[in-house]
Amino acid sequence: MNKIYLIADTHFNHGNIIKYCNRPFSDIEEMNNTIINNWNSVVDKGDIVYHLGDFILGDNISDFVSKLNGKIYLVRGNHDGKSINFYNNIGLEVVPTKTKLEEYKIILSHRPLENNQIPDGYINIHGHIHNAKLDDSFDPSKHKCVSVEVINYKPIEIENVKKEG
Image 1 (tube, rainbow, N blue to C red):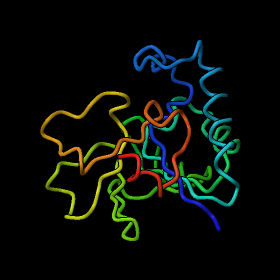
Image 2 (image 1 turned 180 degrees about the vertical axis):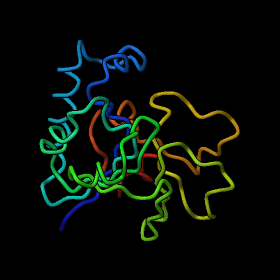
Image 3 (image 1 turned 60 degrees about the horizontal axis):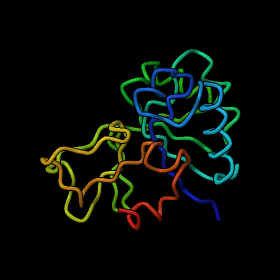
């Protein structure tokens, strides 16, 4: 049976993110290769990956999509400025900025949702904050960050997200 994975903030080709988030890579090439290898070590070709934004900087996006296993659904982040048609044409399927997965009682977004935007019994799975902590106005029981820095630079299986909360 195919599995579903979540990941955010890969920031492929973004050199400044290494320093900004204290990523353990010496350069862009090492970062890109490590994330691709980690991704493919857990995701099979028939699996589904929800990428919660900030996929890549630059224009060679299709080169990266072709190297990654799985069907990738993109919740666009603040660095994903291309058109929906552009992403769809290169193999990423753009989904709404607030995607609800009823079966799992989760809402996917790039930026963390306000507490009042999350229905009772649901949690918000998001990226955007990388390895920073949410401020005190966010209920930690309603939020889970899947930025690469907090999930060991590889996609996390959807069933494990709530367990690791």
